[in-house]
Amino acid sequence: MVKVNAHDPERQETVSRRTVLFGGGVGLLFAGITGRLYQLQVVDHQKYLDLAQRNQFNRRVLTPLRGEIVDRFGAPLASNRKNFRILLVPEQAKDVDAALDKISNIITVSDDKRARIIREIRRRGSFTPVQIADNLSWHDFSKINFELPHLAGVLPDVGETRDYPQGESSAFVIGYVGAVTERDLAAQESDQERVLLRQPGFKVGREGLERTYEKELRGSAGAINVKVNAHGRVIEEMAETAIPSVQGKTLSLTIDAELQEAAMKELDGESAAAVVMDVVTGDILVMASTPAFNPNDFNVGIDPDLWRELNASPYKPLLNKPLSGVYPPGSTFKLVSAIAAQRAGFKPNHTAFCNGRVWYGNRYFHCWKRGGHGTVDMKASLKHSCDIFYYDIAKTLDVDLLADTARKFGLGQTYELGIPGQQKGIIPDRAWKKQYFAGNPANQPWFQGETLSVIIGQGYVTSTPLQLAVMSARVATGRAVRPRLVRAVGDLILPAPDAPLIDVDQEHLKVVREGMNAVTNEWGTAARSRIEDPEWQMAGKTGTSQVYQITAEDRAKGLAKPQDLPWERRDHALFVSYMPYENPRYACAVVVEHGIGGASMAGPKAREIMKAVAAKDPASRNAIDPRTLAHASPVRQG
Image (cartoon, rainbow, N blue to C red; front, side, top):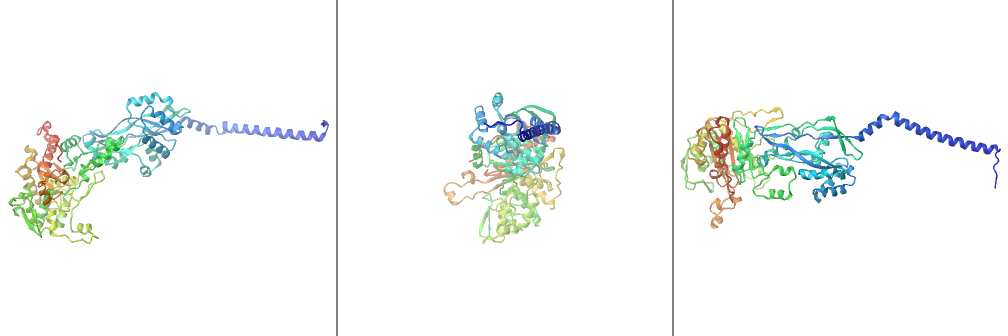
């Protein structure tokens, strides 16, 4: 064993040096700790105080109420209602699958919905609340709240959702809202807008005015600080820090909700459309399309089976027929043809003899009345809807002049209504045919025989019910009336569109108006559609557009008449009108798909709709008792 010499100077020096180094190291360590504590507690005190407060307080977005859409009298067409819903914050729930399992024990969460929720979490991030269920009953919402202590990350919420009180009646005018897509997010101009759209359950306009006026209806988001506990659960809202949201603007329309519903009832059971316009202001009072869908079904998430049913229906309930349905105008086009004939030099007293058919080119052109009408002038040709009179005109009439006249009276064009999907229809002329058949080996010039078909509203020519209503309004007034749907956006009142005189000889319109009056009030083709009240005499014009030509083979099978054919092969029924005859105020167009006859089907429906309009006119509240209006639902033919 070796002993250490306590008096060894060299050894003592080594020990002393180690002691000093160790002590110095310890001193430096404590100095560092002291310095760090000083930095944390004194120098960076405010910084970490702010961070701590941020952990205690969260900034929450306050989604704005969507602006309402109301009719001309303020009746709601699109509003908001309470929506009991359940949200989930993934980062607070920790185990999302376990949380969804617990929720599934209380309310139904299907496998498809669960998969959607997982996709939504991946897309939005774990810090953004995701909607688990909405439109819950109070009973289910209460059960979730009762189990809340055992549901980490679950947030019960009372939000707002879109509601359409009129249901199907105004579906094609209003449209509907739907969930936000990635395309919607990419289209936003600022991060603030994207944050708003990422809020759970937020909806944007998908069709109709909801889509066109999305920014005006959306409103502005607000914000509020909320105090949360260590688990992230809200324990207090700091109302004094709130920046309130601003509700979207109210959209005031020209539509009359009562008249709209009356028209829908009148057309019920048919695949049909009706448009009613104020010929002075251009206001559209009615824009009905049947059958229709219920926009509330889209708002809560449409059932796949219902969606397939709507798409498969031959009556096209998803088609906005007044704006997107195109039909040959049939004999309603004769109003334009009579004006074009006068522009070409034909006088109102020009006559033609109708024996039921006329030979032109290499075939016979037939009148709808097999035995013929005898000798008719221009007024009588409208009254009886004689085809032969117009065939006689068409032999020499320039189709370009006919097309120009049609466009002056509103056909072949679209209008700024705020509803996407309008169709222009076709008003054929030489340039149109050349362009349409460009590159086709069979491309041929315009043949005069084609004018014989176009002049009676057949052949290439097509139009929409809205265009036919505009045509009626322009014939009634002689002015270029333009339709409108929106009267005001918030406090901004929109002026009625200008309606200058149409640049045709106004005298040309007199015989046309007289003919329309004769159609309904002088035992013409629509005598059964006459309105008896002298203050509200209706002038009109019937039309029947051919869908399918009956063949010899059909006749051999006993299918000699249109009503013998399957529904989809029957002719369309049309009727255009205005009233009162002496001092026009309202114009109307009705199209009944495969309704066979304008006189038998479309005319009577237009009469009932116009009687409802007259009953609500302030100047004639006692003229027609609204309680006597007939709104029977006819049985669908076919």
